Length: 253
Image (tube, rainbow, N blue to C red; front, side, top):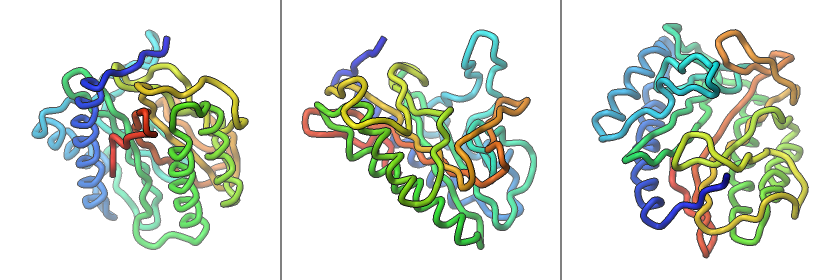
């Protein structure tokens, strides 16, 4: 069931989103060759605690049969698209590094992600990052009352095509706010004018996930997802609230 958020709810989500933004900005500064992914997770946990928030990912179970997620952030490298666990392994020069986290503040949840190029990366990787970030911007432009969910997916997919990249179709955005994953599902592809109509009070996690070589994925034993052909992937995500006048970016990284 789709649950709309009040102005008071959105006010709390702004605070949650400000904590999330700080976490991503600080992790971006710290992410350098030789730094352990596990250290990034510990650093994120410290920032969240000091800011008065709680980690939304830690202990999260996607289903009743899922193992609880063991970390505060997801760190997905290179061909790993999402849900990468921050093991005690070091960042390397040339890595693409997706940093994804969720924040709970007074029971209200935001979700966001960025992907970084570590040091020198090839032109194809630079194009992937640029295209994925632009796809997020184009999807967000569709977030206004009267538009449809399909308009968001259409805009993301069109930008991916312009950049010569593939939309990872199996993985999607979602509603967020009272919980980490809510209705509706926000696809990164679609037809203009199709799907649920957007209305004030809807809060959505818009998150294009693009790859250089394929739209197909495989799930790994630890619950992470990789591109089926091993090609590089990128993931950008923001939490936005639909208002009478358009949208509010709740995670302005």
